[in-house]
Image 1 (tube, rainbow, N blue to C red):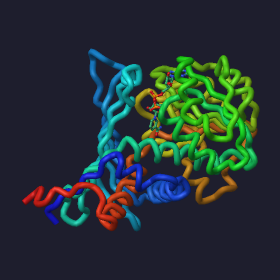
Image 2 (image 1 turned 90 degrees about the vertical axis):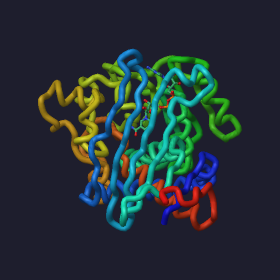
Image 3 (image 1 turned 180 degrees about the vertical axis):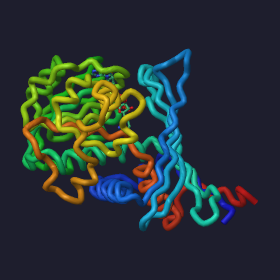
Length: 330
Ligand SMILES: NC(=O)c1ccc[n+]([C@@H]2O[C@H](COP(=O)([O-])OP(=O)(O)OC[C@H]3O[C@@H](n4cnc5c(N)ncnc54)[C@H](O)[C@@H]3O)[C@@H](O)[C@H]2O)c1
């Protein structure tokens, strides 16, 4: 095959629209295959800019074996100031290679895949770890794209949800969050502090753009609380040490000055992390073992992008979607 398939954001949105359950199942499968060793996942590369340290572009090469057999790389930029100019923070492509001859066979717009796989991993972790299946109140710290996506997935997991408690350091972003989901049947309360969110919501998702920890006290949480640490850099090591810690991949998350990485540096070991989420997928009894809030810290693994990307490619070929460039490599 010498052709190249290109899928735009619209194509990806159509393929994954209203498919939260399926995406969570794919993410779960990728975690299990990865933790069982059916993957190859070099560390992501972080391209940073000395004259603008807030920005970065990350390359995530990955191979997923088992039934999937997909290989490729996601290339995703994060320019946090974009949202002040009406643009999304992140922009991404996913390159898929043919696993028999290595040839590039598809390029997919990937900010949607990235947001959905991240939200699916958060909702899946909540479903597995947070023991109250009838939860009614969820907290969101950071009111951007990722927490909006997580809100959509969380609603599929918790049918009784009736209240969101939200906080953003920029009040207008909290108002935008309300606007984005106002037609849905949910009361939204804007909290005046993170403490208030932690007090009111037993399950809280953090998706900010903080680069260094600024939360050193979570005494307003109780031992049944669950924290989804999606942005990875909000909590001080002291807070991490007060939690029961679950990760996606310990080697990956102990990098790039995440809160887990900083805690490892402080402690000189990784013993404060209990297990990867895949262990709980395969043995739900491991969900909560102690009397502490549970914190889930997913670094964000390229195998998740791959499993969604290779599914999108399959559906696009079946349904004649996207643009095919004939003889791209002739
Ligand atoms: N772990 C993963 O797999 C994964 C995957 C994708 C994105 N992320 C991370 O999720 C985060 C959110 O991404 P996004 O696309 O929603 O970004 P975004 O820019 O759309 O939204 C971030 C929001 O956080 C707010 N914020 C920043 N600092 C804050 C603070 N200290 N307290 C409260 N609010 C604060 C901002 O005002 C903004 O509204 C990013 O850090 C991104 O790197 C993680």
